[in-house]
Length: 260
Length: 359
Image 1 (spheres, each protein chain N blue to C red):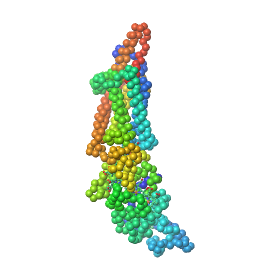
Image 2 (image 1 turned 90 degrees about the vertical axis):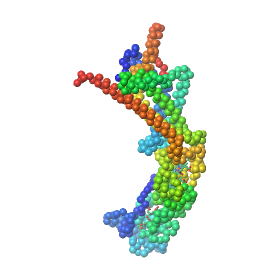
Image 3 (image 1 turned 135 degrees about the vertical axis):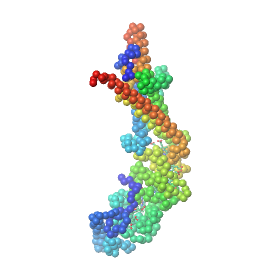
Image 4 (image 1 turned 90 degrees about the horizontal axis):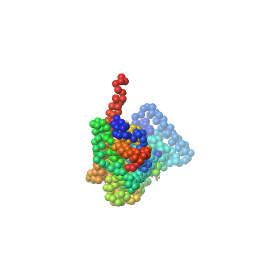
């Protein structure tokens, strides 16, 4: 295994210690996004593959074509709400000066990608020590960011095709029509192949990583999955311990914040 | 609920077989046993029809057929038949004596739109069998005597006219300018199906009504061959791609999935009436899309998503096609490599966990 033996890099944290990675807001946003996404896929899919028998039964399950269309719209609004919620959340963190830009891609991501590929090919023994968000998680995030922007925009265009053509030239609707169908396919494939592999099927974490529900991860898992963040925590821990020793007090366990 | 079936063998279903119809090219081969059974049935049936009537005739009730009717001597050997009361010409049992079939059964017949009509309302020239070669006149229905396809089409058209004078396709629109009966253009039957199985529109759900009518329109409009046959000399006809585009559209897909609101061909193009989609399509769309304007109508015509017809669609599709392909290709590769490596790690660990000592 690629796992580092505890203590390999300086004094480790207790491997069973739980570390808060996501706060309640983030988990709620994820939950809204995930449930609306799955509903949207289930209610939108039949329209793409309308000739297939399963489409008919799916539509039946949602109470016919009209019911299906209604559920699709409700789920779409939920997704829009989740997106607005997230943006407001980021805005609030920024105002409180607690927004950490850990989601922005940087040069380390390219290095990590190469490192990870070398690991896959057996050229190196360990996976790279990923930061708070590994490059593939950043990809997920920005894919959803772009995806939601496109899907909500084109979805509204398709919801009100007649208004669209009275404001814009008709080709705007055509773009919306195809963007909605094709981006949906892309997003669904990306989620079910890529995201589900990374957070459910990967042998190291099968059946799933519970962090999206609990928001917590053990220190051992953290070291495995986000080595660089773990190292930062250890450094922080040691700094505090030293400060506490100076102040003659016991060190409080570090409680890193969970912001994005 | 009955959905009108678009295709059915167009041949008469004959109940009786014996000598009467031995020369009938439509009769299915019959064994002596079925022949005997049918003959028996015919005699019983005939008895049912004639018996009470002749009894009534003896009782002094008016029971004579009109003078112009000749008895089917093959059946009775006599010159005239006492009529089944009260009006023999409105008694469909008479015709059903020889012509049967599920759709002509009284219980089924009652459910059709013409449940109150009788055979002779449409088949005015038919009295007996072998149906006499009488001069059927212009209002006659189909005739088996010297009926060319053209004559038949025109006659079928005229059969319906007397009762549906206001319900025929208007002149000068769609197919209407070439009616009645121009080669390849639709007859009443092409759009309304088997004449004996026409049901009233209200008895069908909105979805079924649109679906069944769509089937009739597309039977021609999706067929290059049938459309060419109906082309005006020297004129272009819209090809099968109109239907393909409709099937591909949101309207077509939703109807296919059982929507009660999505339009079929007729909602936009009308049945008999003229809907001027070219100049005033917005009015049509506005029935369902409240702020439709002329621009909007262009979304509903049947141009395909080709580079020439709809360049914006064409390039949008290309863009997303490649984007999806490349992204998913890269992601799948990443996943596969990850799987490969994970499996190797697990195998290596197994091997190191079970050192040679065990064997």
